[in-house]
Length: 282
Image 1 (spheres, helix red, strand yellow):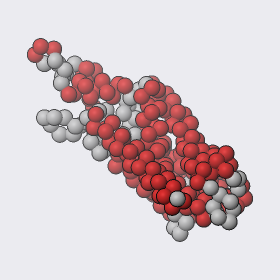
Image 2: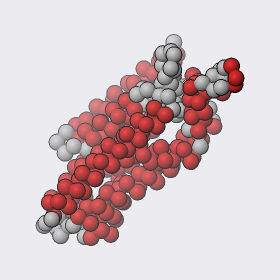
Image 3: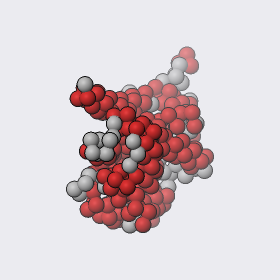
């Protein structure tokens, strides 16, 4: 029975991740975007996500004989909806499930290793997952609010892409510098070695797992917030960009190599930021 329960929980966990990525893909398709977050036209090449909104063209250019709206008009309307909290918060919450749940695998494996010796349970395992994800849902609400403010300030476009190379470059440099910070070191230390956290803060039952999951989620936000913010550089609906961010965050939490890649990535991000700003000066 315990084997069946374990298998069911793990299958449900991975099914939730796949479902989240599928929803993200479906949302992008519904908005007429490709994997790079660019608008795709039925009778033409892909366009940059922000181009369809210029000069109000997305609301008028598609109207042909009889006043019918083309796919371009509908894409423009979809992009306009990306500036409301009611649209952005669910999108970011789904993105948290797609991007951050995969990074939990080492943590959940560590919890399982302690289930016998430390009186853990499947209810506690589930509590860890729910607590962890709850923190990221709160973060989703916060970053959705930030995105709305940035759009209204003209810093990013309606698809969440930086309008200025200066802003994009500065954000890359800030996230790169953060990789060397004490906050990153502490938070990554917990995420990279969850066993040590469990040994020092062990609590049994569902409520205990929930409590530990909330704390681990907070550490994870402190560790990985920057890679979410970089969505404003590559585009929050750029599935390839966000997929690469997910891959790195998974690698960063692997027990064997996670501690090796953190600072080199910081250097790469800073160099990329300098390059972007330099390109903007040309």
